[in-house]
Image (cartoon, rainbow, N blue to C red; front, side):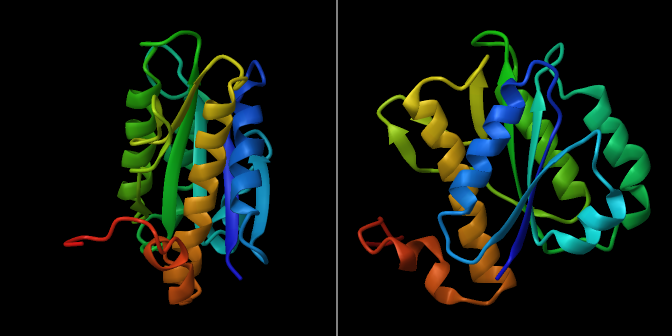
Length: 187
C-alpha cells in the first residue's frame, strides 16, 4: 500500500493536532503507511524517497506559511525538484482567528507542492452544512469542533484514496468508486 507523510510545522501545538487528525483519516484506508513528521525532524531525502503522498501543514504566520516550512522546501527539498512529479499532495493550516489567512496559507502550500510536481487537491465534500476543505483543512486555534476535526480526517482519507487509486493503481480506492452514492459527472 501507499506511503503517506503528514509533514507539519507547529509552535502552539494546534497544527500538530491537525496533523494527527489528518493521519487518523489517512489510516481509515487499511494498509496505508502513514507517518507524522515535524518539520524540525524532517529529512528531505526520506520525504522524497518514502512519501507517495504528502499532507503539508503550517500555522498561518502574518497571513502566510511559517518560515521554517518555507525554508525546508527552499533549501532542503530543492535538490529533489523535478524528481517528485506525480506524487499526491494536500494542505492544512491553523490560524489565531477567522480571516487570519488559513485558506491563503493552504493555497501557498499547494503552490509549493505543485512547483515540485505534486498533483494537489481540495475537497468538494462538506463535512457539515458550514464546513468544507476546498483549499485544505483549516482551524482557528486548536481543532476542537467535531466538524473541524472531521475536515482534517476527511482530507487525510481523501489523500489515502488518491494515493491508492493513482500510485498503487487500485481503482477500487477512487472516491467515485469507493463511495457509490457520491454524485458523478453527468449523473
